[in-house]
Image 1 (cartoon, rainbow, N blue to C red):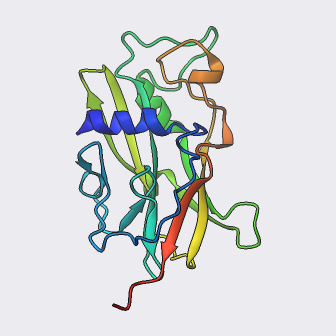
Image 2: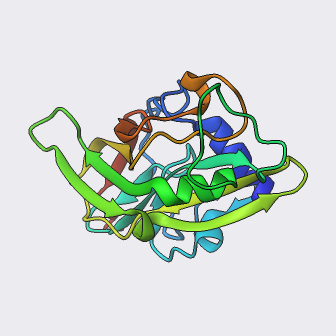
Length: 205
């Protein structure tokens, strides 16, 4: 299960083409049973979320009037201080890379319909969105998984939802020495692309 979440992170790292893909136009509605299944994993169960999840490609549709929860790519670090590598001059605040991340993680800002007249932002603390930290011993990494509290329903039609992350200071994941690839900055930065989501009216049939 943890490996599948790692695969999700790799597939949806902020800004990738897959994270910004456009939903194909179709008449179907989202299933009434709203479990978000990715790579064979029920992410609702994994994250402890009873509401409909929005995030990975299979889970980008909801009903009008339905509250929903935004999940977004996991943060991955070296498993421990042993074997962690950093850019020259970087000194972590905590020895273990994941502990360093958690100590600096201040939360996120979710922006729906960014750049439109309907734009609306929600700010959450790190404690509100950090759901679990797991060790993937096979990949020798630790994985932080996220989900927001429930968000207000959106109107019928196509929307976007974008996640900005907030750190108190620069953090490096211990997995490489490239500051651009391995070390997000302190402050707020865009973490995902403008992920598409569609809200459907409930069928009256």
